[in-house]
Length: 141
Image 1 (cartoon, rainbow, N blue to C red):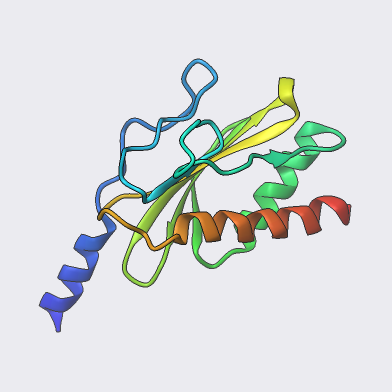
Image 2: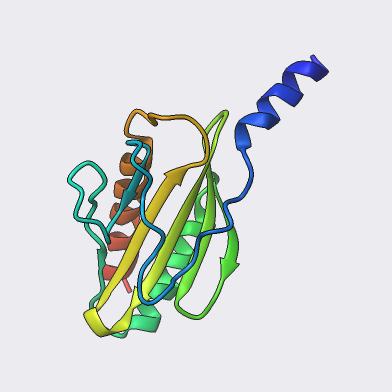
């Protein structure tokens, strides 16, 4: 049983060291289809950013509340306009990023699997779920 648990722990992978905002951009997605980003032109990887209405800091605070309430999300970096979270499924850890682009009134998003080639659409579906929760929280306040 202990060996099985160690094998599952190996599915988490190591935290990438290339994440964060550099020159107004989140890290690019790899060529594999297990990543989505609002800052790519690739149709395979493209996902819409979160729209911000009203005061940007309040919108970002609502997003933090949404992520903090999720049992599958652990905040790793919480900066003024940037959040990095680990998003867990049963066996795997994905890295999620959220950057408040005040100039364009959006929150750019990126989510990528640490391991494997295909995620069977999990990163996209999870971010769309977060989008729905964000819209409810943002419009409700």
